[in-house]
Image (tube, each protein chain N blue to C red):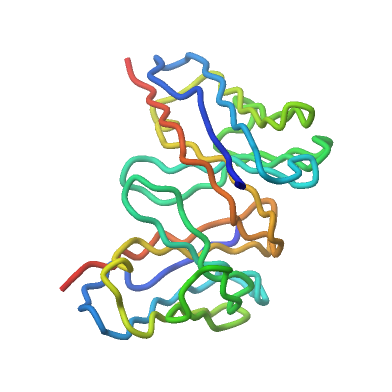
Length: 119
Length: 108
């Protein structure tokens, strides 16, 4: 079945780094753009980053620009988010998501992975 | 960035009630508006895309309307499984999408 599974979250100290992964299955991963979206505890949804299907076009939210790097490996059906210089305000559940059905609506979401930045 | 404002922020209702949630965009977004349902500890689930199109598998008691800056999500007859938080999202400025702050629907 169509599925996204994130991994790599955990507890990290301020200024530290973490790499999130998202494994896709059940659809042609290389045909679709991917996004990372996060949700701080008790808060709403915030778009973080976008990567085109080929990986040639990338965008970041201003809040993470210069600190986070999105990438993908279409041969491995995998999406990544390298997070450096982490801050307390980066604490959130991170979701990978895809708009497979069109209209730029996210119809496929992973289960999320929790990132906690604390000393 | 396009700002999305939902109202109300929270809502108490009973099973069987008709409920309407409103979402307003800070500029015209045509029909590039999507609605999601999120239950505690779970990922959001797409309900409505393109303002009024029902996602496959979503019950017909959910409907969406609107265009331009003003949109509504209506649940015609609340069921126990509908108590959740609902988010609107504009996809007009893809990839820089933005979400509303959410509407928490609680049991009265």
